[in-house]
Image (cartoon, rainbow, N blue to C red):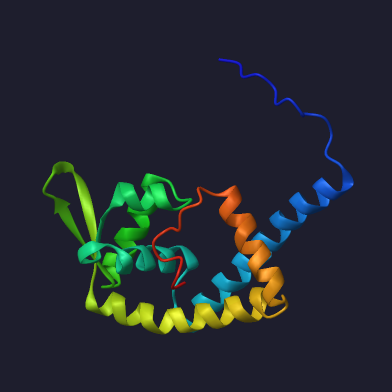
Length: 162
């Protein structure tokens, strides 16, 4: 099925292009740097950290694997493989979902909670150094409002404690 073009589908202005490309460039660089730092210091990828955060904030530190996939940029198979690695590392347990025999829950272990505590400090420091410190309080407030406007407007679990 063919969709209708957007009403304003002409070329982007220089300012629009700079804003879009800047967002993409900064996002890629920051994510890469934060991932490298977490892997070097905590032996944990940013994607694994994100899963641990979601589980830590979930009721009973438990979440369906399909729900984790829906809240991240990872596919269902990608989340499943990542959870299997976290299980192997003792950070997560995989348990059958009582409501759906085909589904599985990921559950944060005590070892996972401990690893998350130290990784959180590393991640927070990295976010502050690379993203927040170069900005003024006013710029941070404006960016927060922009992301709320562009997003769903609702805070995601874990947003308050990255």
